[in-house]
Image (cartoon, rainbow, N blue to C red; front, top):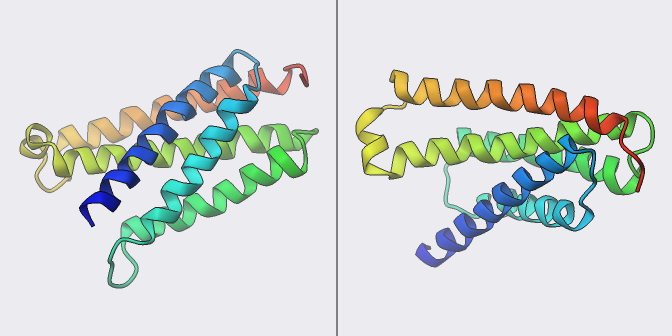
Length: 158
């Protein structure tokens, strides 16, 4: 299970890093096709591998995984089946950025659970440092996602 966890974390970090590159590409009105393929595939793998951890019943992690898979299905459909034509361009941007946000959300949760310094600041994840981190990241993603949707909407198709 330790090796599986390490592989899952590595895939997640690649998904987040490539997703940030894709986000900045969208803001710059660039498709970045290879980065997008890496981001979407590793984000799907992150969600899929998350379902292989032992769990009992519906947990918050499983709920996030289900939401992520639904969002990713829509992003993949908009990007590859509808080729970003008309409204699918905006749908793709929003769903891709939501998938990235969910990965970052989980990264923050896991960081506050596993990193001793952060765990000391918010042992139950109801303390202000945890809440502030989540709210700041949420607001940042909302602003950047709206900006990306607006800017990428008028991007060239190439």
